[in-house]
Image (cartoon, rainbow, N blue to C red; front, side, top):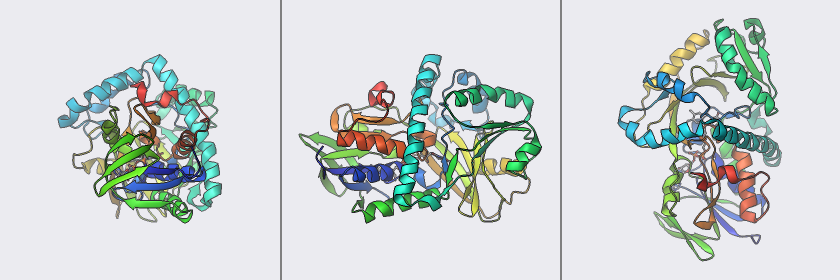
Length: 414
Ligand SMILES: Cc1cc2nc3c(=O)[nH]c(=O)nc-3n(C[C@H](O)[C@H](O)[C@H](O)COP(=O)(O)OP(=O)(O)OC[C@H]3O[C@@H](n4cnc5c(N)ncnc54)[C@H](O)[C@@H]3O)c2cc1C
C-alpha cells in the first residue's frame, strides 16, 4: 500500500476508532463513518474492563451440560426469548461444535495470542494518545461461594497459569476483604488478577481516542452504509446519502457487521449476546477493584465516580425491545452480594455484544474483496482486544506482516 491511501472505516465504536488511529499511524488518510456517531452502541455502556485474564472461550468442553440448566431460568445468566429460539439454533449448534476439545484448544490458543498482543498494544496506545488518566490499574476479583465452587474453578486457573496470566488464589474471606471490604461473607474464595485493567469510563475512552484521531487530521462523518462492492482498485460504499469511494474499507460495525459482509457475498454467523446493566451514582459503594461473579454471570465495576452492575447474556437478536427486568434482577443480586450497595438513582442500559460461536473475532481480508478488511465480532472482549485488533488491521492494510498468525480469525473458518 502506498502511504496516503484513503481508507474508510465503518463503525465508530471502540474497535473502529482504535483501528482508525492505527491506520492513521501507518500513514493512511482515514475517514470513519457511523450512522449514529462515536461510541453509540456496545462501546458506550460496557463494564469498562481490559479483561486480559479472560482467555478461556465461552464454548468450553462440557458447557452444553450446564447451558440447559441456565436456560430454564428466563432471568438467569443466559437466556433465549422463546420467539428467537429457532433463529438462534444454527448459532447454538456452531457454539456446541466450538466446545469440542480440539476446537476449544485452538480457540484458546488464538484467544491468548490476541490477548497478549492487545495488552502490549494497549500500553503503546495509552502512551501515544496521552490516555494514562483514563485507565485504572486495580485488578479483578473473581468470587466463589464455598469450597465446591472454588474447586470447580481451579482448572480455569490452571489454564490461565499456562498462558502466563498472573493471579493469586484466596481461600479466606479475610484475605478477600483486604482487597475489597464490604462483600457478603458467602464469598469464601476468590482469584485475584492484578494485571486486569479498567477504563474510567468506556464512552470517554472512545471519545478521547476519537478526539486524538480528529486532531491528527482524521474525519468522522455520520453516514449509514448499506452495501459495499469492490470496483477494480477501489471500494464503493453505497451509503444512505450517496456513494463514497476509497482505496480500502474496514468493517467494524459491531453486531451489524454481518449485514455488510453479506453484501460482499459472505455469510458470517454473527449473533448478538445482549447484555444489561445499571450505573449507580457516586457514593453507591466503595469499590476498590473490578468484581466478577462467574457463577451468576455479572460484574461490578467502577465507572467515573459511580458503580456499574451488569452482564448476563440474552440471545435475543437485534430487533426485540429490551427486557429491563434483567437489569433489575442483576441489581437485586448485587445488593445481596454487596450489602452496603446503595441501589437508588441508577441508569439502565442494554447493549449488543457482537458474537461469533467460537468466541473469536473475525480479523482479516474479506474473502471476495481483498480491499475490504473485517474487524468485528469481539463478543465480550471488544474493548479488551481493540488495541491488538487495530495493530493487526493496520499491518494488513499497509502490507506489513501481522504480529500473530491470523488464520484462527479468518472469515473463511465457518
Ligand atoms: C453489558 C456489557 C458489558 C461489556 N463489558 C465489556 C468489558 O468490560 N470489556 C470488554 O472488552 N468488552 C465488554 N463488552 C463488549 C464490548 O462492549 C463490545 O465487544 C465492543 O463494544 C464492540 O465494539 P465495536 O466497535 O465492535 O461495536 P460497537 O460499539 O457496537 O460499534 C459499532 C458501530 O457501528 C455502527 N454501525 C453499524 N452498522 C452501521 C452501518 N451500516 N453504517 C454505519 N455505521 C454502522 C454503529 O452505529 C456502532 O456505532 C461488554 C458488552 C456488554 C453488552
